[in-house]
Amino acid sequence: MSRGAFAFPTAPKLFKRRLFSHFREQSAIIRTAADWTVLLYIIIPGGLLGGRFYYGFWNHELPAWTADLPFALILALLAILIANGGLVLLLQEGDLLFLRQRENWIRTIVLRGTIYSLAVTSLKMVAVYAILLPFIVRGYGVSPAAAWALLVLTLACSWCVKLLGHIVKVQRQGFRRWLWLIPAVTVPCGIYIRAGLFWKDSPSLLLLVAAVLAAVTVWAIRYRLRLSGTFMNDVREDYKQRMRIAALLLRGVLDKPRPTRYKPWIFRKSQPLLKSKTPESRFTAAAIKALVRNPAHLKLYLSFTGVGLIAVFIVPSLLKWLIFALLVALMAYWLSSFWLLFSGDDYIGILPFTKEQKAVAGSKTLPLLLLPFSLLCSAVICTQLYGWLGLVLFIPVGGIAGYLIANMFSAFRFAR
Image (cartoon, rainbow, N blue to C red; front, side):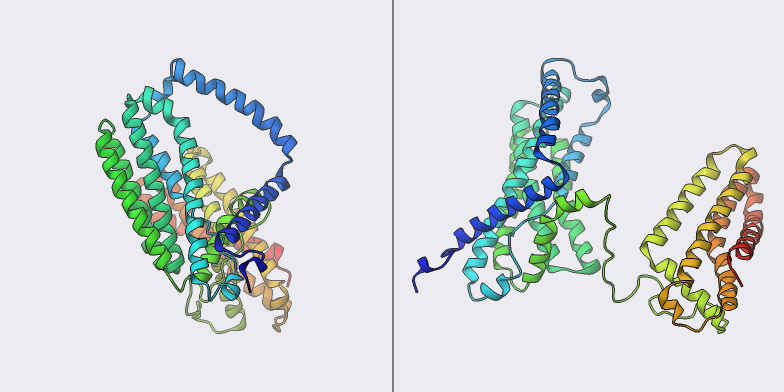
């Protein structure tokens, strides 16, 4: 059959079709958050106001606070922007079935997707660099030649980081990914900051470093095209990058899905936590593990602990113990609510626990979960008020307070 009989007879036409679909997908995501009419009311006034400020940065005096900012801060800001993002290769799951025997097609799509992603990255970096350019040239006295050389270095570093980071992401999993990803991103960014900081008055040296990073980019592209056995990881990373705008818009609406883990981070062997083997003790251990292994509950516990430590540290001495009692009571209330939610779960209802046994287990669980918080808050107060003597007092004071308040909430909230 002739190629004209197919809807997409060549790989470039297939890539073009996917690129236009990608544009429509991103615009549809943006339109779900705001209509173009609304955006125009924001973009036009914002553009006019921003243009007026930008004109003033070039033709009038810079704000006084810019004189106190080091040049390294500008480079660090650009490096943070460089380290974010990734590549959009426009691969799809169906390619594993329909393009399996066409290695050249997949290689063409990957190459063009890489070039497209680097072009988008370049536009972003040029836009941000143009905004910072008045401060770079007028605020830090960088010559126009050096400013252009620094722009070339910024683009070369962004290309290098994107390629190296993408190669690591599609080849490594788990903690090994981070072991490789950290140097793949930080080393080029560190070279970029150091070169820009020490050679900002030497355009030739900046261009030399940019040439080295560009050479690494070319090598990374050639290596990426020869890479095999990473198709599903390619699709996963591609989907993640295409959904960045949607994830940003839905961040405050939906909770982030929990990653699938075959083993928990804490209590990996699931050994008994308490010496007692009674049903109530087993129930207590299960509740403790449930709180610690749940990222949302553990994050809330640690966040409240951090805020509580800061609160008891900064309040006046006369109010420290009062604030301590209130904070411990608040933590006890939340922990008792967690126990009621845990013990009332449908899965727990399968087990033959009586109401009395649940109350006894809750009375054991609440002090164990509350004691770390009460001891830490007591340690802050005692060491701040009583010095070295506080190192001896904080354990009995915090332990007794946590135990009494936990028992009080257990008696009030856990029906027997």
